[in-house]
Image 1 (cartoon, helix red, strand yellow):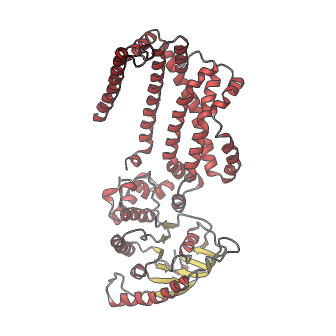
Image 2: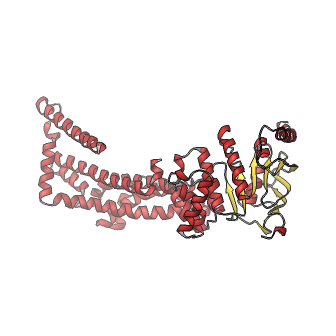
Image 3: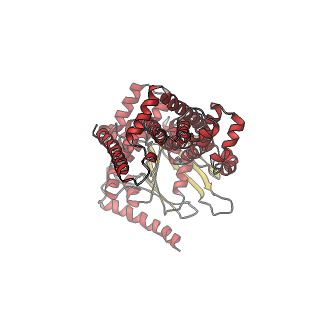
Amino acid sequence: MRAGATRAAAIAGALALWAAFTAVNARVGLVNPVLLPTPVEVGRVALDLGASGELARHFLTSLGRVAQGFGLAAVAALGLGVLVGLCVPLRLMTEPVIEFVRPIPPLAFLPMFLVWFGLGEASKVAFIGYTTFFPMFVAIAASVLRIDVVLLRAAASLGATRTDLVRRVMLPAALPGIVVALRVGVGLALFVIVGAVFMGADAGLGHLIMEGRTFFNPAQIVMGALLLGLLGSLINTLLLAAERRLLGGRAAA
Amino acid sequence: MTPAAGPKIQIRSVAKTFASGRAPALADVDLDVAERELVCILGPSGCGKSTLLNIVAGFLAPTSGTVLVDGHAVTGPAPERGVVFQEYALFPWLTVTGNVEFGPRLQARPAAERRRTVDRYLDLVGLRAHADKFPAQLSGGMKQRVAIARALANNPAVILMDEPFGALDAQTRETLQDELSKIQRVEHKTILFITHSIREAVYLADRVVVMTSAPGRIKQVFPIKLPEVRDRFAPEFTQSEADITRVVKEEVAKVRE
């Protein structure tokens, strides 16, 4: 509860600083005040868009893209990561290809996603999925590979079969690494979601920001950015709660 | 088991070479361990004593020779051969209880029976009060007690211990030796115990096997004819220690040369 109060105070403090700075700037004129929206202006834009239901639509569109793109990538990365971590020949086969494709900045492929998946939602979901897949896959495979062989030996000498080893030793042993991989993936998904604008999006937070630019509405740009931050911290909170549940007493120790 | 069934563990001309062209780690090891016997294997580091234990456990295949347990050839790890590792090897995501009941759970034993088993062995190692803790919350000595309870709870035919107290401080080490000796007086397991501590071997073993430095062979076997409850300061104890030390030193000197 105390931690919650501290957090609320920190956010209120940041808002107050922002308000104070813009108020001083309005008098002194360090920057053209038009270019530096105040909390009140941003709040007003949020209220206007919120009243019409527009805000919710954009927010949910972005959330939906992240959830689908990241969700698909997470399932694929988990399945393939565990498989590659377990199977040496498979790892030797996939490693050179992955090491070549992985460093290519996903944005370099963005136009191809338009060509392949069109202007609809599919291209955005696929792009987020592609961006988040490789880092998650590599991290998950690595966390399976890092499992201490002595744990596998201990389980085998207690009577574990191959299936038992995967289910009762490898997965729980790799779980902390898997959770970190998923959190990195979500972070990346939010990082590239604004890229959806370049794929002909007519909704979403990135679209909202670009619209703010087009109609010269700095308050709307700032609001869009803040909402992305909110979306990110929301998902992170969910993941942290999941992590605590999954890792149980191990995390506390 | 009928009493006339012969040795519990039979190691027959076991040799191990890790890479062809390289010097063998083990050469021609023959050793029998009788039922209820505790045999300590002593030797300079790098003499292949852990390799031998890994072969008996089924983690490694010998280059030649065979290991029989209850007359059956070892082909891989199996629950009839429990292992206690120097690095404890507890499952960090399971509680003390979860670790101890890992084996019984694999065999799908009913919950009530598992609870009885866990209680019994945690009592035996004096950790009943810590049943719900995670390994990270325990000291090294407590972790190794859990590992011993975990091995016992699976009711293996033999227990293989690979320098189990090697990572502990001297004080804890002696306490655990006392406890293992006490447990052995109750459980009467067949135990193959690897150590590089001569004192530990004399304190625990029915027989001490001294190995040569690489390639590891059996150099000499010392039956320890001391009472079940041993006194580390008794003259006979010190005498056994001195006899074995002399033989071990010859091998350590060879490594240095």
